[in-house]
Image 1 (cartoon, rainbow, N blue to C red):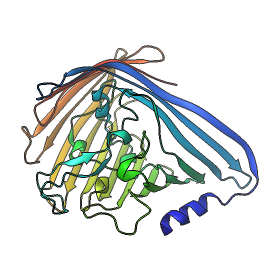
Image 2: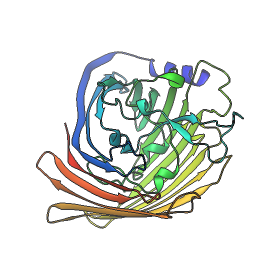
Image 3: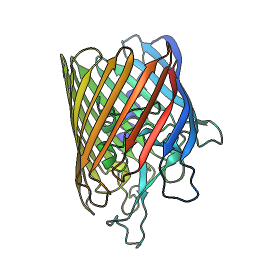
Image 4: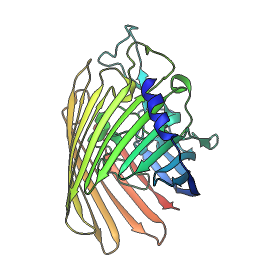
Length: 353
């Protein structure tokens, strides 16, 4: 609580105000998504669509400090839309009621905090407030987190939804900006995010608690901490990150080491090394090699991932994708094979505004 009060106090120290600015931006997408399922009553192919509005307000003080905030309105339709890679875990299924996550006990996922809505109607997110000056940025509330802000973490994603069945899915969830409202066990969630950028270097730290109103969280639940750093020099980009108590599960720790090389303006190759080290259960690591290029106006991409995780059907996952610029929108599709030997595919149109 003291950490939250300190950061909030820093944000509200105001002097004279200059003109305020309100900006509306967002994205939209629609298409078909196929996700192979073993369930007899699950339709593998669904229409997937999303409409997202980001509402940003900012005001520059006479001192040069910028204060602002963001809130999001989002609508999602189609279960496959939840495969966008922004899941937030909130606990685990404690089948033997011993208060700790044993091997085989699955992590639970709060879908309302990731996809914004599930077809019933658009939902408004929780908000964050920020202060920014001279390369420093502080966010409080529904804040971003350091680990998921790594610059090249998602560069192996393909398709109009933007997903990968590769190795960054080894870490079974982590806190991030929530596109939907807080609910249930996260009703009093709050986060603090701090970043500093100078030249080609960006360093970040974040702290997130699922419930700021209590001193002692439930057994097996913990506050999440993460750190990350990115550095770019010429055509080379490298990054590293660490997350403790990933997704508020006590002892679920993960790390990432990333590297990318831009061959030219349209072609890059990258390598990702990720690991997951829980206090209970088996640790695992994964490596992903990916690349993206442009051939006569058609974007092409692909990845191949390996893992040493126990319990998966195959230790290799892979995928290819293509995209085409429609002049203000993008037509894109992908087909991928997961570590569980299930096929995922999508095709559709996306745009930004």
